[in-house]
Image 1 (cartoon, each protein chain N blue to C red):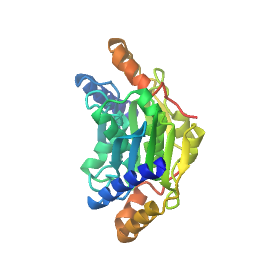
Image 2 (image 1 turned 45 degrees about the vertical axis):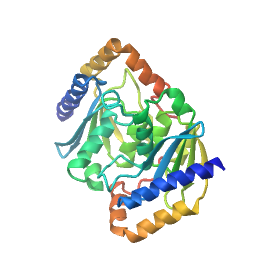
Image 3 (image 1 turned 60 degrees about the horizontal axis):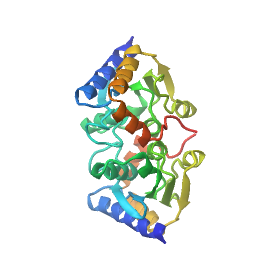
Length: 158
Length: 158
């Protein structure tokens, strides 16, 4: 139940991104049942190359109160979409032990890397995450295709 | 010779970080013999969790002119220190084909992951990079130990 609750909060972040003209991917970082950071993809609206939802949530969590190693090690990251290599690397860097993923059908990220590094993955196969993302691609094919070209379709890792 | 020249520019970024009270790690992104982005570690001075030198350089490169996939694929990233899992993930995400590393003796990053994903690594074993970083640790043991605890000593990947 908690996982579904916090995924809703990540979905709210994805919707916030849409309202800003951005890609609907959102994330929240949760420690001891409390959201300590929220974030969403800001590639379009902030012309960023690195602010994916997960990194935005991790950065925002730290900006309020500088987190300790223990904070990260006791947290779960919720993300509406399977995390890319960069965000997976951040999860591994900070030893975040658990990642709850809204969906990985539209894009599969670096889940193998996470698993190989002992990160627990919970996949919710959430339809709302999928529909939000698919609708965005349908309505913004040029923007999305440009984004895909920027990463040359990279979604997973060797 | 070019690699030594651009590493000097990355070292200048590391020194800029020291002048701001930060950790001396710097990076530059170079395309066709031209620096398109500079950056340095901003964990301390900007209270960041994600602005390592490499991500800062990648973000700054994009902020001036939105980069295309081809731009990244024709670039080399210079960094004074072996890149962590997060920064290595970003290098892989954007298909940056070549990374020149100042030194990896003080901290070894996710070089295996880079190699496994086809990234060419050039190690310069640059003494100035090493001395800058070692001096910082010596002069700021508490700050540095806190940083190390935040990542639980994570420097490489499984």
